Length: 211
Picture 1: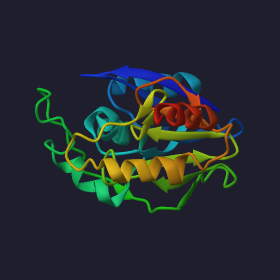
Picture 2: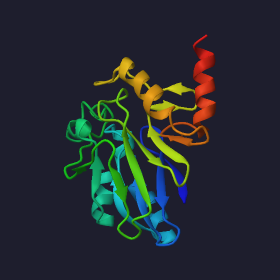
Picture 3: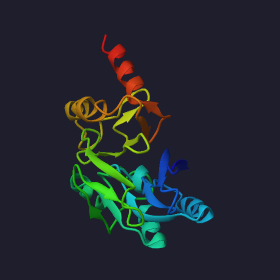
Picture 4: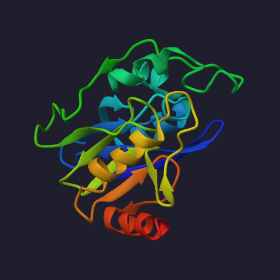
């Protein structure tokens, strides 16, 4: 089961729950703000969150992570190249937001790692390193559900931004072309700030824009 919850801090952002229907356990992806609201949704549905997963280290994707780590007793995971973003308000862009945000406790995953539920080892996400928006941006691919959580690497209207610290247009283009658009055409891309779009539709859009 995939559920989207739009939360709002400085920006609106799409937080996702990827939940196993049988065990009611699952993953929380990019809790950007409104920890109380996210926690209420989890409690109301009777879900057990095993891990909090971050597609990248910008504050609008992890602003509620530290508080939820404590309330849910669930570890936070980030790609190593973005670990320093969690502890540096300048890099994570919260320094000028009026409320600098840091995450003190986190663990790391690796490219290609399969993150499985303890409650159901057949329920998993695959980590795909997709740098460009930030050095440690990742996509979480759920082949069984036919979805990929792409963070800010790609939106329904085109590539993510690269004008922040650590952004790299060439790397972003390679990530999109070789790591996301190579997924099955019917894979639904779920981003942090746009509506869903399939890989096939996104490829056609980007091809049209190239001419």
